[in-house]
Length: 114
Figure 1 (spheres, one colour):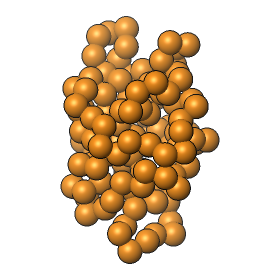
Figure 2 (cartoon, rainbow, N blue to C red):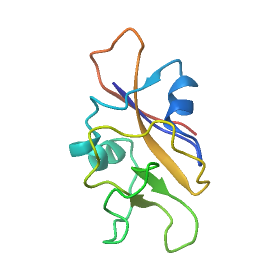
Figure 3 (spheres, one colour):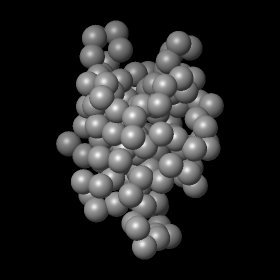
Figure 4 (spheres, rainbow, N blue to C red):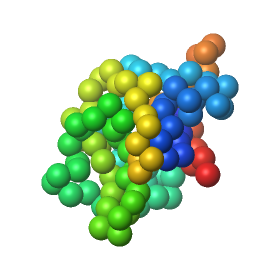
């Protein structure tokens, strides 16, 4: 499993396919480890009561934009076991995407796409 942080507005399907991988809509560790995965990429983000709970298909994500919300972690708690890999389009969010090789993969890697 590789965890990739996409560019603003990209779906996990796009992020993973752009790296010759496939989005893992289930079987990921996001439910328990999304915040630690972001931190392992060397990123920091703020969490507020309004943004911490998974609400939208394009969560979990790093939200960019206004000064108040810059590097806000969105939807990092209560992530469902099955996520929507096709959700995207919000130009203020960089999705955290679980990707796998189509032939399977045992190791876990974290990558920041710029």
